[in-house]
Length: 293
Image (cartoon, rainbow, N blue to C red):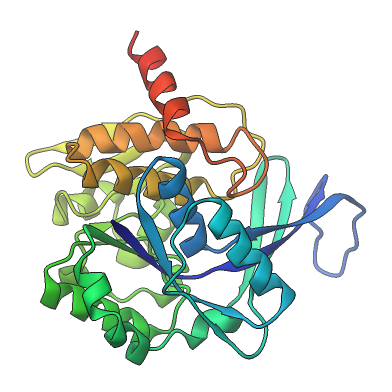
């Protein structure tokens, strides 16, 4: 069982030909809502890839909260340990243009997930093969999870987004950290090569179309990206993390797991929507086979 502890949002998505400048209004091309949040996205990615996965998080007592939970059930994510709180659910306002995105995340009910609630779930977390985290939660809750997982000897994979919430003191508690190249520079302030060398087999830096960089304890490894037609990059990082986790709990080597995750992420950006574009296991395996031939 993979346990994801994190956010569940409703994404409010607007598409336009260009991003508006300060004070500018532009005409949009499309608008829709779709379930999202980095925690929910990563849980769905794992579920679509055939993993038993549960999400620990909080929604509001509003229509968005009901829609979020209904979608997770449809995706076969275990939500038995999710809770509801008064007030609105989390929302992400997403602007899309030319295959790029800009996002404003509003925590809402996600910040009602408390350290006390984490403590109540000690046995559930302790039974996990891997815990996946992001940083769309209160800092006290992040620390509660990290310290509990350390006590229970459960490995943690952390996606340090938003990067402003990351603390270097997390590193001894994290088995895998998966920033993108921009986040890596913000977090560590050194070159990617120097940074991954300092954290062998722990720090995996995603480079978009250029793949992933990490250090295997002997040398720097570059796992190349997979060419893809870009429709929507929203959720590509969450797909990568979900696919990486899915392979690691199955006993894959780190390099093999990264290769699989790269392919999954490349497939995800070819469709619209964070969760809607996430591939199932057969799609990824088929693409991996074609690339190997």
